[in-house]
Amino acid sequence: MDEPTVSGDLPDPESLTDAFLVYEVEAAEEGVRYYGELTEARESVLRTLAPAFRQRGYRVTLTREMGEYVLVATERSTGVDGVPWTHVALFGATLVTTLYAGSQWYGIDLRADPLAVVGAWPFALSVLGVLAVHELGHYVLSRHHEVEASLPYFIPIPSVLGTLGAVIRMNDTIPSRRALFDIGVAGPLAGLGATVVVTAVGVSLPPVASGSTLVSDLQLGYPLLVQGIAAFLGEPLRYGAGRTVNPVVVGGWVGAFVTFLNLLPVGQLDGAHVTRALVGERLDSIQRVIPLALFGLAGYLVVVEGGRGAQIWAFWGVLTLLFSRAGSATPMDETPVGPKRRVVGALTLVLGVLCFTPVPIAFAG
Image (cartoon, rainbow, N blue to C red; front, side):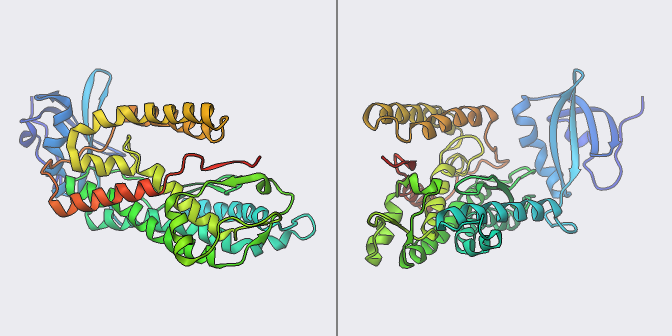
């Protein structure tokens, strides 16, 4: 039987025998497929083999199909090929939904003049701005560490905020704990910077009249970060009857709330990347506690606050349970990060706590 061979600059099958004994190689649409048997524990195979593929410009995944283990090598590309129409379309749709949401915060009567929706641009800009800066922080550091990542996908939804946020997709192996830390921490820190700017601008703008729309019955719970910025500038966050904060402040609130949620150390959230880089596999023990803490917070709000805000944390308790089952990122190089990154990580997690408020949003009364 002939030995399996590969063309081009892919690793030779014989060079993989320390972790994967190859008996067949096949070129397929998605890449080159190595069929074989494991020669070490499955969780260690990719960590052993991925560096050799990465050096040659490929990423690898390990699957099991019809009783066979298959190592799939796909060419890596950290650039953007052509016009990213999906991203453009989602951004356009989210712009529309955030403009519509902003019209409610400004009390714009769209039935009288639908085109007046453009008057809500400061709200849309503030919300989209903090989300875009957060995700671009991840994207820039992914490119810096040559990790393949997508441009941000914005998620439109017709609601009082107009969006469920934005995400980027990393379809690549993470070379080291250092890279995992940098990519994970870049989003929250960039987003926090945008949040501070947006909040400072928002509290300095004049309040608006509260109308009879749905948002007039909502009450935002402001985290310490937003309260501190307002206090530093000598501006209020509460006004008398018939007036409410400028809707740009809501953009700052969104930035703080998104930062706190993303810093939860669970699954593929930013907090899990940062914590995994800092403490290694001890993350598994930490993320078991998070759903329990969120369910406990929901229960506390039911007992003490009459249920105000409890649904949010119960919902996120369920989400974090699902996220933890999906697994976390595993870097190829487990060399611990240095003291400077540990300090930055601790500071980021403290800033995340400043973005927390027990009742983020609830109906007034």
